[in-house]
Amino acid sequence: MDYKEGAYKVRDLGLAEAGRKRIEWAESRMPVLMHLRERYSKTQPFKGYKIAGCLHVTKETAVLIETFKACGAEVAWSGCNPLSTQDDIAAALAVAGVEIYAWHGQTVEEFYWSIERTLDKPPHLTLDDGADLIFTVHHKRPDLAQHIIGGSEETTTGVKRLRAMAADGKLLYPVFAVNDAETKWDFDNVYGTGQSTIDGILRATSVLLAGKNFVVAGYGHCGRGVAMRARGMGANVIVTEVKPTAALKAVLDGFPRDAHGRGRRDRRHLRDGHRHEGCDPRPPLPEDEGRGHCVQHGPLRRGTEPEGTGRAGRARA
Image (tube, rainbow, N blue to C red):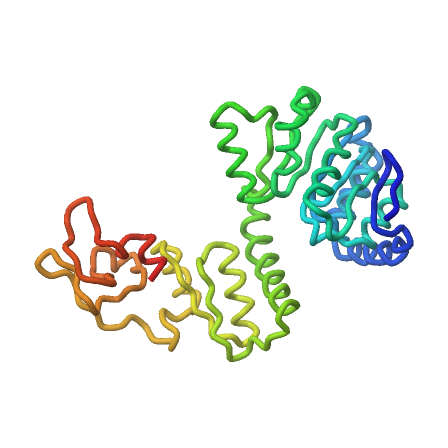
């Protein structure tokens, strides 16, 4: 481990050359960010500001970090996931003068130690993926909040937690919800997450997807991306969904309603205030609302449903 107080802690500085080559490759495929670097390196809009970041330490993030530095910012960085940090990238950034505390396989204690080091000098802006940096400020260093102009949070989970804090009046500085940006939820979530999820499955299992039954639970932006990629690799994709409009989107995108590629099956509808066996247990499409989709006998009373017939029950079915 290579460590210099107030500057960096990374696995091995000897990996810097390999990391630099990967960063340069990423730069050649990120034209928008490189254009911004070229444009704003002349005016230095971030001069005099410190940015603390807690994002995945990858070659793409490295291009963002070095763009901030080129535009005048002082940067301190840590990884938001100990298992995603690329040690050669961290080494290349350290050699380039970026204050960084990140290495692959950190323990929980090392993970939060690294975040705290990025706050040793009060930041003006925070960039977060998972809200660990923001929560560290709020729970361990609330005194820093008065210096922070604002921040950003990338994930849906993090944004929900921060909105809950804001509703309770406990959010100490404004945070921009990156996940609300169209380029995030309608591009990165669909195409980026779709591809990276398949990539992770293949790396972990080395399984041949062609011909396999591939179940995607939920047809939101991420689920849609995964389903598209799995189908593209020859899998028999089965989508499960409890929200009728999302289920309809899956059907219109060409995903069958059952594992055999058939359309809707015969079903019995409500009779005499009861739901009957033999009804389709799958979630209804919008035009099916009010028809029978039961999984067991039981009376249908106002304000109640037998166990297994509500939204959660349909999900379990």
